[in-house]
Length: 438
Image (cartoon, rainbow, N blue to C red; front, side, top):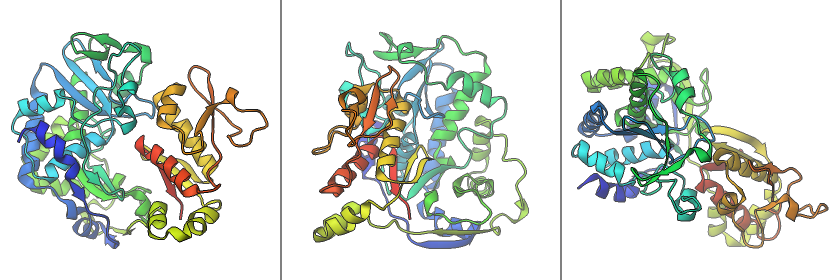
């Protein structure tokens, strides 16, 4: 099976939900949680060999870059004179590779991988960009080229983590490199290029000879399944002496690194060299890794409002309607907590604001993401709302062209389950997670 064919079926890969579990040491955490989704050794090794060979070519390369800021243009391609091009994406690219490896799919060769990349089958954009009208300029030329394909069915409790971080622990001046190249750019920076058949941002030459290597290092960290592991999302974790997100803690990362060294040996060392890995620095209690007490706990996610409504329709107004006014919600975007423990109205406003600023959308683009919900216009122009109208937010979201947008406050009236759940679905489609606080 070619990789193009495999990519069409990767959505069928399912990762089972998190089971309730407690661990007192890193070793227990690995053996009883992380190791549940361990990938096949030979499959991972074959992926590494293919990816390494892909980057060894001095000719044209297309590199997938995980975004470093909230407002980068995912799916947009930047090109250099020497044939290197890169695409801003998100963790969906890594999930696609993980899903293929999880099914023990091994790429045949570099040509097979390159053909899949050039077929634009990798899903690197949220579904809101899947509409052709949103993916083209007024003349019909394509912007968002990496917008097709499917992802494996990750239960929302799991996080795909990287042992060697994508944006840290580099040899050399990575921060300077990142500031130079990983900028979103203005929309007018992109222009149609007949050589590629779509709109690109031509960046001329790389600044110096080492920059190509840093692009490759970034790509290999992001794409190599040897560098992945699944762990429950940080909001299911109660730790002692660690940062909020245990997947970022260097003690766990060093423990995982030691396991990879034991399993892959020279291949892992080769990866570290190609990835310009600087090391994690001084690790506390390094000799006792695996014995450090962590106070870890995870549990299954409670039923959603939609499930409550479906399973007990007669209690809709009691369970969702009357009590929803007093509930509090968080907004998470790109792993970052945007709003914490706020009302529906505050959450809705900040969700729309975050989306508008992240992709620098005009009103039409924002309206595409947040269309009408039953009898509610999710967003309106400030000028279209009478001054005395209290059905929309008092504050405005100001777009780049100066247009002021207001957001509906009508979530708790008749039938709030449909309205609020529909709005949450709109947010989920663009990577905004609205989560009820405990």
